[in-house]
Image (cartoon, rainbow, N blue to C red; front, side, top):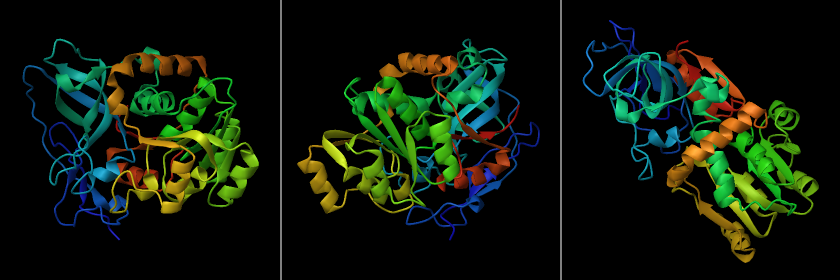
Length: 365
């Protein structure tokens, strides 16, 4: 079943070969128990102006990010005051990285690499310089796409989530469990938990391959394939002293199972609820009564975490992430799909767990 309005997967600019994702009006909006599919997006051609105004910058898109939160933007109501729903017949946007080709903003020069959280899904674009930040490839050993993941908002979410809501106390023998552990944020959160002082980290994910990557490449102590194994039994076995910190990316039955095995005075980092995003429910979704009773009786904290509330910590936290990356202490995985015309397929794959690490779309080199 088609989830909602069709996104024009790209507007191909005739003169400048610029593509843009915009939305079509011939399908119903998504959001009521709908699963997004690649066919929600299509390619369209358009013309890019050859003139830029003062304060503007013309850029060529290199990388675009697709993320779970975008599913909420497919709804008529995105469900929060910090997210805007994508509008019909307008270009879709999200995290992006590009190269400056022409500038009328004194802060940017041709050849500079820039990023924005509101990058239009186009091969080229004219943007207000105020929405751009210059990035230095040296900080990530030349891996520019990392600024959309491990050295960007995803990494900040993992790091600040652990630090602000996890209450890690080095030397206290704390066990951290991460759901959605092989995804963009979860794969970083588990590693950061160890770097911050957790004694054990267990990941929950959906394939044997992902479990192997988490343990052999990212330093997780163990991983559970929830599609093949009994999560409750495996948690009892792997976490005999209970769970002290839970980095929750998925919600639903998996989270209920983890919470039921959490210790008194433990902490849930409520980062995402991807298993619930295709349903017409409030966010964060309420817990079942029996799980809510466990949470209350054991004094388990479950406060919504929003990385945007910690913007004053971005600079120092980004430098920390980059240092760990350069030192090899933070391993980064990406799943890259090439071509703007394939961004709909990349989004669908990411929403159904087809990625390991960050899902990136390579638009141009």
